[in-house]
Image (cartoon, rainbow, N blue to C red; front, side):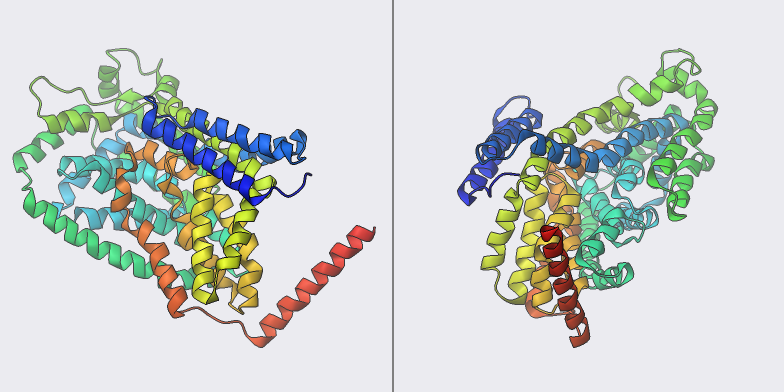
Length: 497
């Protein structure tokens, strides 16, 4: 290990990362963040080496960060296969078809948010929700005339509500583990801030839905044209909804995410053969038997646009296709590049320096909550990883919350109110890259992801006002002091040994 990196050099690393990303996204024609992230990792590595850090140690930090992201990479690859499996099986076209038939334009946004909340509560995964229900709702929203960014915002709000409130979610379990609180105490405590934010978001979506549908009258003949186009593109049946029902049930029964998603992929395969005539039309007459693996790997496009079709049909046809597992490797490569940078700034203590700086300026209960939430957002942006945004601030602010005699569930709530829910705001973060890839949108959905940006604001307000900020009892505080003393004694014993 090397010496502590001076704060001004830490700022150089962060400014280099921000500058390179701004150049790549705003100036460079490709708009790709990959090389910028690698160059930022090089800057961080050079500064670390100049301060005595060995490359072998930095490499271990990079590999540890990549290892933390491997489950996310595997889920991305499998979801790419799953979307194509469900597209070819008629599952996603059926979800779009029934959604258009059932959902009223005036309540579409609020319905989309609620549906995604229910699915993500059942699965504990915002990614699975966005990759299945979200994809279908984007198609429904397009058919009803809603901008893609607006629909995506409602989908992301619902998906992340369930992700941070479900006991099946990894982040919902990680946050209390970092803070030292109980899982169900943590979930109950989040109801105050997240529930308040969801209610406000649903009211906003209701108003937006009524305003948008009144400003833009939906042409029923266009809806008929759309549903007929979907019917011509795929076999529409309630039975094709079996694969997503299986995935929801499997994860709700606590089957691990990867086997559940793989099950969803392969349950879709028999329905492909039921949908065979439509698939072979999309494959220009080629045999389905020869293309099952090819479809899941390279994708399929189910919507053939007839001549003279309206613009909405052309737009909708793009949502009846996907590029399969191979499409996801662009996103996976962003994650790997980001982890190179995130691993170095984590293992060298660069992020810890910024946390200590925040602790010095945090005054009082409200200041501590604000510093914690800002730190979570900062780590999401700089370390490019949702889990680090919970682990690092959780480790750094735990004692500060204890010294202020605030119960651990206050800290775990702050971590989730900011770390979990803002991770998708940054295109180079694992969650940000994934949401954009699944939903086919840029960053324009962020203003419409009302729950995601409102939740941290509500949490900070609760921190300053003291609403639901539970205090420790004297016995709990004494127990924590005893545990700290025991840890110091064990550390001294280890040094002497």
